[in-house]
Image 1: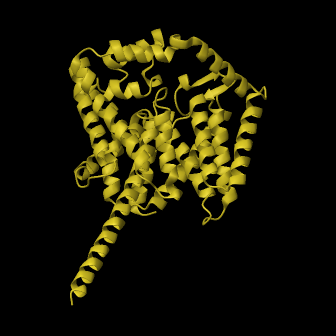
Image 2 (image 1 turned 90 degrees about the vertical axis):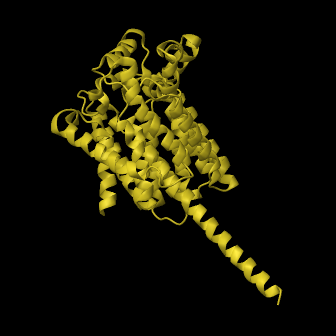
Image 3 (image 1 turned 180 degrees about the horizontal axis):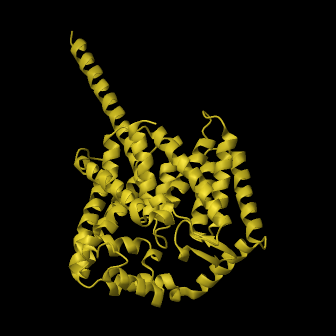
Length: 411
């Protein structure tokens, strides 16, 4: 592994905070973790304005919003700058500029992501089979819910991205070992179901089905629809604890209507939380759990069920302000209008997944997803720049041909 690939490999480990392992939360392991991320951010800043086009401007907007948010936490809540280190894992956006200016092949990025996807699967199965003790994540993510011991395992970004890479490679006729890629994709889907998050299960299933439908002959399209429909029907009506729990939870939430706790939480944060007009534009800054700001948010969650992490894009707005929202909106638009070759459709799937789940999840902002998001946009940017370069070369060649034609046609 070369130096740049090793740098990226370690960066993923540290940005995921060792998959939020309990062993890395204090002492020297935490210091190494935050120190490495800080160095990566510092060396990335000089590259921020060296390129333009593609996804660069919206990411610059998000980075600016994050920097301003540190000041806003001090201005609004009196949260001292000594707490600003809390923001470091959420500043991985800056690393995007280092990655697009230093050549790391997309194929190598894919390989690294797949390695971390396998690590995720192994660690999840270990934690699932040892759910009596929390090794990764926090105790609040371990609970008897929806018919199973529900474990929202940290580091989901690299996991879901690796699953989307797997289905792309499975349908790539130029690659071998299709059975292995299909097996990986199926295992990924099973683990997604085991984590019992309805919205994520639905979105992942949709993208799996869309991908297979667009890459097979008509007769296989019909077969794919029938297979997915039958599998879904059998699962929902199987009577097993997970399916029964999912159905009951869906009925309960649907019957709640406007009283659904996440709707109430979003309404509160949007209408009552911001203390002044400045916060409505620039946000409140990111919170440290031990500051007065952080303690206020913890109390809102414990006393009223208003957890900021449950309201998705509202959290982005409350913490980082309107400029970050604009940045995400531009990224979404560009992900729709900028094409990618068929073998890189997984880039769109991942971006659309975190956008579609942004109403009730913290995937847009969580450090468990952020490094994967940065890598997806890095690969997307590389493809965009490559296509622009090809178009420029083609245009120049055409101009040269026209010049030669004009010169000799007059003889």
